[in-house]
Image 1 (spheres, helix red, strand yellow):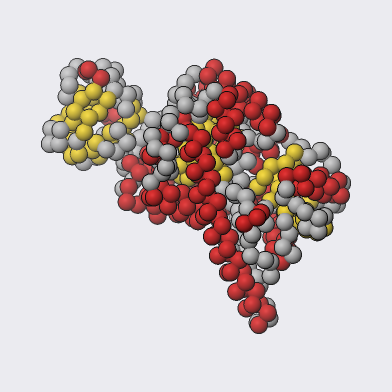
Image 2 (tube, rainbow, N blue to C red):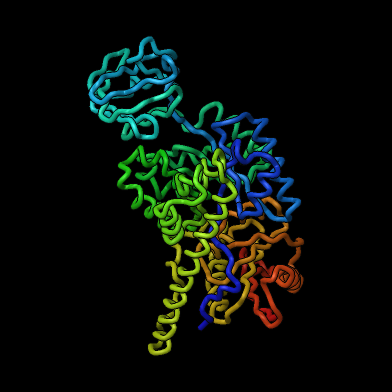
Length: 502
């Protein structure tokens, strides 16, 4: 059996996605965030111009090159978000028991009328439907409807402001998955070399495939991220996860579209489904929300991050904490600290689990020493079954030999995903000569992207990893490395695992 995990060689395996905004868009701020541990930056396309996003992308690429660290970039399309129109005086108080009308047009004629950015809203509302405003803090119910308006009673009151969001839980909308602005932003992302493009308010796999087709026809290899934040997405979860390259548990709107009490279990369901399909999954929204103003998170927030990691999240995302917060760097460092402590216990528990299985195997023939996570039910697109088998076998060997590094030569990155989703305790290095693939590997749990030359010479790859490991303090003389690669005999996959001693 391998030795128990050592604190001396700890790294943080869970990835951090950070949103750029006014508090973090300067080149110096980006550099400090990368130094703190950001792996992927999110550009929120709902705010700012294409020119501003291009400038932010250019800064990220310069910092990535200067630090010689692959950093991914995610362009987050706004999707069909419904917003209120302009209100008289800019804000209106909704008092419980009072009534308001949703009317057609772009401008309210009185303080008791609302307009929205979604023209067919009045047509698609029905008596009994719920309408949620300001991220669910204000709740209304439709009591009467005519051809020109829908009259609603306030169930839960509060102050609503112009342009704030409108959610319609359970209402089937005919709105297109991508607006004209979304199409323009997706085309920009394709031309700019963005690494990930996420689609908001996904309802079906068809919408995911439509975005992928748009990107591919424009020469982009960006990975498509499906954001799960609608009831329809939960109903179609398997097909959406199957169609996407990665998934985001977008708990903000999800907690309004469904009962907030159900969000924790839905989060677990989404993560389990992503494990079955070998898809990276990001958990997002309010993870360290109090750190927008405070230097320390609440205990509940720290527990939330830890539980997401234990559930199987590949990455955790910061939104307002880094976009507009007062302490963006501290928020990233705190996310890393929580992940480190969680992974330390997770790997220790895993070691004890494997030790028990190992003892059982010694006492009973035919009882295998199994991985901590169950085997995936489906192979990720582009992954050969031989590659999956070799990765799984090499993972077991790496553990039994107490290897210090597990290296994967991956042309497209899918072999690195196969290794990542097994959550092996031995740190993984993803080798590629493609900068775009390296940036995408930055999202995968436990994988450190490492640039390499294009070669089929396995000894050259081992020498490259060894030199890097010694230089970075990851290796010492006598340590073992496990390399998964292809021998080039036409199997269509990686068919070789090599053990190398430094």
